[in-house]
Length: 392
Image 1 (cartoon, rainbow, N blue to C red):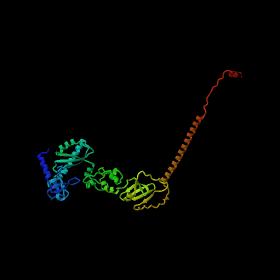
Image 2: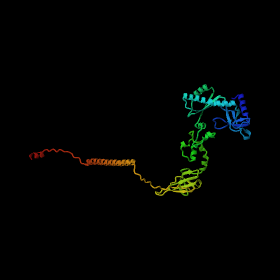
Image 3: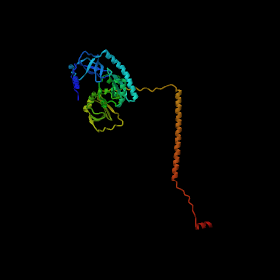
Image 4: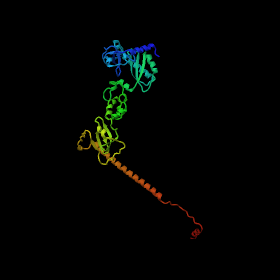
C-alpha cells in the first residue's frame, strides 16, 4: 500500500515532461546516457551535474541539447540539475584523489579477511555520500564483514559490484590481435552473443586460444562478418559431403568464400568450380562409393574458375665440388668411422660364434633325447646251468 504523499511524488515525476534531451557521458562509462532539461543552452563539451540512480554525479555533454518533440524522444528521463560550477569541478578532482586512498583501504581489508576477490576500481559520487567498489571474482563472495569495516573507516554508503571478464576488459582496455584498441573499449555499448558456430560459418580452425580475445571469451569481431558468410554459403552442401557433378562422384574438400570457389576431389581428379555451379549442377549423394585409384596414374587437376599460374620451378644447381684438402677435424672423423666399423665387425663375429655355440648345444640335447635307454641287468643262474659251469 502506498501513502498519499508517495502517490503525489510519483504523479509529479510522471507528469514532468522535459523539453530537451542531453546525452551525458560519465568517467569510465562505455556509452552516454540521456537526461532531461528545460534549457537548450547546453552544448557539446559542457560539464553538467545530473541526478542518477547512484546519486548526484557530474559528466560531460556528448552532444548539443536536442528538442524532444522534433526527434520524438519520448522516454522517462532523470533531470539535469545544473551546469557544473567551479566548486563542482573542485569536488570532482578531489574525489579522484580520495578514491585512490579508498581503493588502498579496501584492498588492505580484503587481504586481511582473506577474500577471493580482485578489486578493480573505486568511485565516489559527487557529494561523497556513496562510494562504489567494482571487483572481479570467480564465485560469490561473502563480504558482510568487509562492509562493516569499510563503513566504519570511510563513513559513507558502501556498494560492492561484481562484474565479469568482458566487463573487466571494457573497463581496463587493451590492444587486440588486429593491432587496434579493443572494440568494447573503443565504441561498443553492449556485448553481443558470440557462439562457436560463427567461427564454423567462416571456416576457421577451431583453436580457442586464437579465437579468444583479451577477456578470454570468443572475440566480438566474429559477429561482424557472420551475416555475410551465411549469405555466401547459403544453399551449398556441407563441407566433406559427397556430391555428383557431371556424372562423377566427388567429395567437397575445401571452400574459399572470398573467391567463391569450391574444390571437389576424388581418387582420380581434383576439380575447382564456382559456388554458382556447385548450387546448380552438383547433386548431393549419400553413401556413394568412389572408384579405386589406379596404381601408377597421377591425380588430374581441372580448373573451371580463373586459371591459376603455376609457380616457376628453379633450375637445378650443379653439385658443388670443393678442391680443398681435408682438415684435421675431418681426418679425425674419418678415423672414428673406421674404428666404429671395426668394432661393428668384431661384434658381428662374436654374435655369430655365440649363435653357433647355442646351435651346437641345442643339437646335442636333441640327440640325447632320441638315444635308446641302456639298462644294467644282472642274470642269476640256478639248477642245471650252475652244475654245468662247475663241471667245466
